[in-house]
Image 1 (spheres, rainbow, N blue to C red):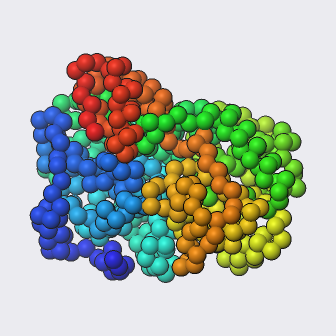
Image 2 (image 1 turned 45 degrees about the vertical axis):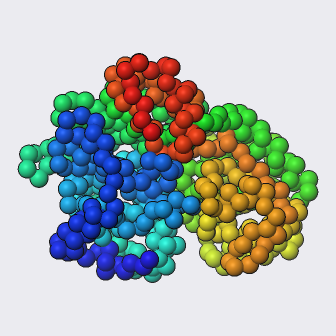
Image 3 (image 1 turned 60 degrees about the vertical axis):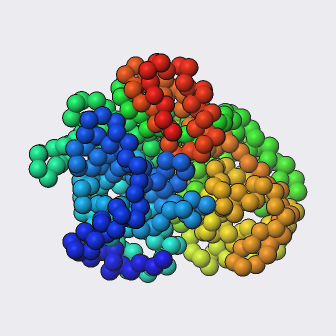
Length: 482
């Protein structure tokens, strides 16, 4: 589909009403009742790990929790267009800035949404950066066109502090609900959201929860009260490697790869994953476990901007990370970290590594190998047996990253058949998502008043495994719903 900046920016009450009627007629979705006058409808991210979008309707007025892009195989089932009513939505609440939670925001604006967009301060900084990249890749818009759209979105952003109850205005009765953000440990600025109902019960949306004991961000703590908990279940059936184990495994792979020469390619998300990798690599360099002559290349202008944001919001770092910085170390900006900015520099580096086979570690987006500069490295270097590819995050079904994980003999890049002779590794310890134990601890931590547990943002196997794990630890009257 195509959509113009004019469509994204110019609103029409008539077209919005028409959109509402057709959406309701063509795409009916089940609204699940929580309590009298309160219903939740999932417009994405219920049985998938992308496209997160959840509507909380309170006595006829609604909050929207996230408005994300469908990715991988989910993209075939989901639409960019907003196929639900928007006239009753009073506010959009963003849990964090990953594109599968914010990617359809321009289309929500196009559908007529003019309300406030609540998020944390760090998320407000990241949202325009992420959307700018998304609009460029999805629609090939010019910088001026993207700027016009982003300026419109920025005007609706309402950054708020962690821990403060924020009233959300009603059209008729002052305020119809209150929301509160608390750290989720997933990426910089990420939060789980509490929604206070008129009867004082609390609905909690976890967003994406981070794992415990990651070195860069603090652990997420469960809310003190949750009557209705909607929790992600991405890794509800898995246990991650520990941070210590992931660092040792990364070191082992790097040392083995360096013996053979060639390039180590790490496809990484610009937000979160790249910064975690830099943090661990700096630790290995500090302990003299890696040569100071080995170039560490970040070839992603987006990742470079996000890393600056991480440094800007150092107050959100973990105690360990703050201690390192206070001791004079630079966990996210060390001497041999080389940032590639221009496309000309990028092409020159790809050609150089392909022709010389010299050792280097290249961190480049996108994390699922569905676009971005990493595609040029893969196109040029996958046929080379000296190349190593390390996946450090979830690879959605239908992505190039998932195909490489499966060990295919060839892939198609830019309509060219590319033989795969490189070695491919997968590491779970770098996941920005909580694993089964972390999710269980989070759920059990707020079980005292829990009436309903809703498992979302995961496939059926992950949900079932998490339900079986956490069920015996909940009160018998607590309903588990997936």
